[in-house]
Figure 1 (cartoon, each protein chain N blue to C red):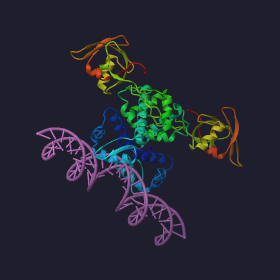
Figure 2: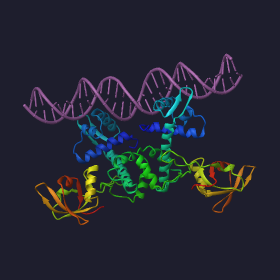
Figure 3: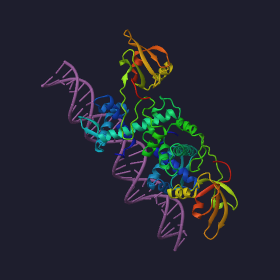
Figure 4: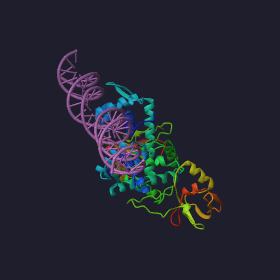
Amino acid sequence: MDNLSTTEENYIKTIYHLQQTDSTVSTNDVAAKLNTKAASVTDMLKRLNTKQVLNYEKYKGFSLSNEGEKVALGIVRKHRLWEYFLVEKLQFGWDEVHAIAEELEHITSKLLIERLDNFLGNPKFDPHGDPIPDSNGKIQVQPQINLVDMPIGETAKVSAVGSQSTELLELLTHKNIAIGTSITIKKKFSFDNSLEIETNSGQTFTISRELALALFVTKKSQP
Amino acid sequence: MDNLSTTEENYIKTIYHLQQTDSTVSTNDVAAKLNTKAASVTDMLKRLNTKQVLNYEKYKGFSLSNEGEKVALGIVRKHRLWEYFLVEKLQFGWDEVHAIAEELEHITSKLLIERLDNFLGNPKFDPHGDPIPDSNGKIQVQPQINLVDMPIGETAKVSAVGSQSTELLELLTHKNIAIGTSITIKKKFSFDNSLEIETNSGQTFTISRELALALFVTKKSQP
DNA sequence: TAAATATTTTAGGCAAATCTAAAATATTTA
DNA sequence: TAAATATTTTAGATTTGCCTAAAATATTTA
């Protein structure tokens, strides 16, 4: 399935991402994500169903077919490689790259993306810490946990953030926390659920529960 | 004028390129270049006219407005910068990059293209030797002449080729001629209009009139 | 210059992607 | 479980971009 419009690709990608978090995905969910109306989504679901990338039964629900998932992973791969390029080579901040990558991810050349991958040194994770699927669609799964679920005394590396807002970036920059920063949990305060942490740069300070909820960590493994 | 679709941009770019060579541009010319029909072109001319990028009078003709020319130069800038990127950073051959750049040239971010320009070292000419407009749309004009018009004894640098066909590339590769190669005219044979030339690598050989017609040179200046 | 030819435009239609309003179906709750 | 509510789908329009066939205008040539 290769003859897909940019719009069709965007629907497939959106459904893919929604499926990752929610167990079931509704017409309304898709409409909300894409800033469109439920009726438009229904139209598209029917088109994607005939194109075999979706299993769809009216009024019953829908999910990506294997083919559809492959398409989605291809788009995600392109998106994340371009994000990596923008941050590593063009000095963009990680909070600036999403919109640009949304456009670049629809460039069709297969050869281009393989050459880009090589040029970038075959990165496994994008600037937000999200894994980059390989050319076969395989994703290197990281056992990620939320910072609030880390036991006292343990150390882990920040591997992803729960939001990509400028506000969060501002706070993290100020606290000197980035993807790759090692964090050790020193104390948990039950009064306000704040956490005292120590980073690999030696600083010790407390962070709010809100901030901790936005941080995901891995015990070992990747950058 | 910023809210232009990819299709509209392609029409503007095509009209721009046709205007560069032909003194007048016809509806049929545009249709031929874009592989479409004259009626479709007329539809688009009317749209572009209301969008102020075109001066159009029915049955009389049309040309880009100042605004339209600015748009065209912006697209050409993006196209050539991306071609430069593909050849210099991703190891593509100059005959492979056109189709990919046709897609990349429609990515909208202004900041992206300025950062890309810096990343590439602000190149002034693309891999085919064509000038890259600056961010204000200014083109560095090279006084280019055709190789057949060079007088005997003079030396100049290959700055552009008249075609981007794979066949031409094959021949040039075999003869060791590339953008930047210095060529001195040694002799002209009136029998078949072939030329004996010497290149900066010291080789001396003859080339056909057909090949000479495909080569453009500059006396001094740029790479 | 008038007729023949070529070019351009209009008229009317089609497909993709979207919308609003109304109808059909599912789910919730009293 | 039946009524109320929420969700999803259909029906019918709209816009963009393209098409064919026919009409209008320009250009060429006899």
